[in-house]
Length: 388
Ligand code: NZQ
Ligand code: ZN
View 1 (tube, rainbow, N blue to C red):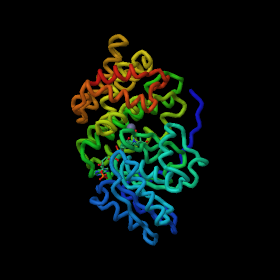
View 2: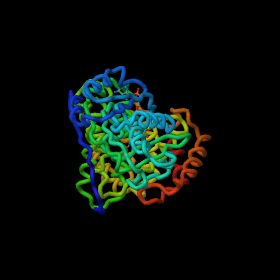
View 3: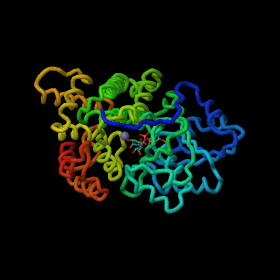
View 4: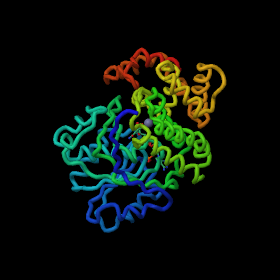
């Protein structure tokens, strides 16, 4: 097992009718900004219920944070924070609203051009660099990203999605009430299953380091997603399925699966670029890239692919390559079974578009990806061609 430091300060409040807890978690004298997206949280009445729990405090609202949250929109929220002297942020939404709110927390009192915060990449933004950072809580409405219990955010500006990492933006608390996700469109639920699944595989299908317990946790989350994912998509009000989907998604990227193991993230970096260039949803971008990446990287990942085949898909017949083919094929079929197309062509992206993806990754300096840093742009080209 590799060495690791693990710290996660986010309090999780899980279950039905837990919104009232917010009243005891937000300081009584806080000046609160509730942030939300395109309006689903308004229409479903969640914002109104959240406002009731905050009675006695000064509460402002900022709506309109879009999927793949845009820097310019978030800077408008920063203006509200400064003008109203806000000292607590409450994000109500999916990964985009939560990520955007994390950025607002960092940017609100940043001493300088806040765009500089986008340049850190995967290097954590420290207290020294960020100066004063606002505390935030979240009410999760879409189980997918894990943003509700991690320190990451992904912020879009122009044709690039920028990872922003900082231990200063772990939510203080997150309310996970599966019933608040019942209003989701089917395709967003399916996106969420794929996103959580690939978060786990990017921390699991690398190379063995003797991390037996992390491997078993990863396999448990993957098998749970395979079990409950189809029901979570097809039966939106099945509480048990949605609750297990939701907790799986949180566990997938709260640091537990990835502690002390190598991590890949190439599927995410390529997927982010597909989203930025072609507007493909995050979960769908991963469903396109991941099966092909596993195929192209089968030599580097051989041992863990065989473990994945045996323990997640119960494949133990045939030679090694047949079992690896079987596991990759099952992975693709699982995504497709949720209604998520796994080929670029289904999203109108053709062979002629591939050079744009390569150029964008090159411009972002993403030329040495993967768990061993040897996934080059030639590999990306092969992965995208295998995804056509
Ligand atoms: O904006 P509203 O009106 O709320 O509608 C949203 C949005 O259109 C809708 N929605 C959310 N909850 C709903 C609902 N509609 C009805 N009922 C509800 N209960 O769903 C749509 C998509 O929402 P979004 O937040 O964009 O989806 P998701 O949670 O998948 O987040 C995707 C973003 O997270 C980033 C992605 O790059 C992308 O920008 N990621 C963040 C990560 C992190 N912070 O750790 C890791 C991930 O790998 C990912 O990169
Ligand atoms: Zn993701």
